[in-house]
Length: 395
Image 1 (tube, rainbow, N blue to C red):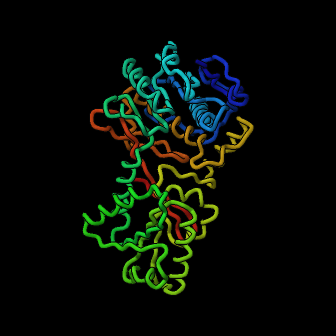
Image 2: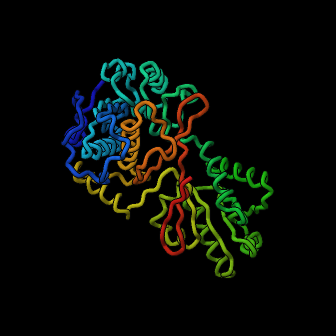
Image 3: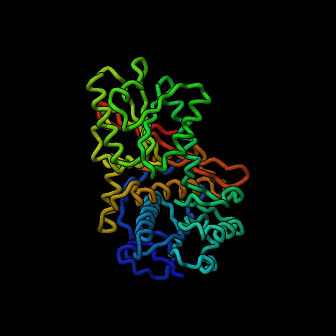
């Protein structure tokens, strides 16, 4: 078992020492996205204790990603420090082959107000039992395999299961595209994982009595064109998220709109498409693309720019080029939960509207799952508009 030094020396060298301390000034001052004033209700509690149980090492991709996420948590701690609040950080390296029971035997773990972790599902049962026994809140930042959520009221699960997300996205699709003519394009991708979503969407359309069309990416241009409505705007859905099929689909749509410039076409995509933005941005704008996602990384906002600058300043390297950015995810999670527990203590539920934190990348709001824990229900439609700007629609 290794306890982790909270701040920059440990994170720069990754030679972890046994240490626990109150967050103070080792991260350079004026961290990005620093709040300008304390929220009105954050006055009763000045200190919160946060535990972190994640693979914090440099041995593989999991460790490196979680180190970056942890750095984001620490930057959130520093932002709150500027408002006069302090965070006791207790961090443990819990690798895939680690013994979580050895970590949980540390007396410091019992003193946490909340614990962030674990990454690995096989560590979930022991950690769930531990937080229930000691009345500690548990924030599961990435794993979707947490059956304990249905029975443990102390759990916050950030990521939704694919089934839950598909249902929420399909419901929002029905609201967003009421009056559109849906067209589902079969892309002949035997490896696709998008079938459950298109099946859910078709059930919603049929239950509502909404007519829709199905065509094939290999259809001849004349047959392809026949399925599009000339009287309604069309919303096109592919049954794959792969880039090669997306390229073909855009080529076919470009040919179609050249022949029939009056057609109104909107494309509905997948979170995977965010990886293709730099190559497809013009097409995203042209076809009014909507992408459902639990986050939106926008490198052009002042908040994102400041946070990335401060990360480089503190840790002498850039964030990984990933979607989403793990450090920004950690910062948003830290600001949300730390402020929540400072304001409401153990009564914090993360419900919609209870905090006024404006996320940099990752919005959060939670609903209770029956008599169990709390599950994040926040999702976005990221919308690329023809006037070459991007908006987000939260639901």
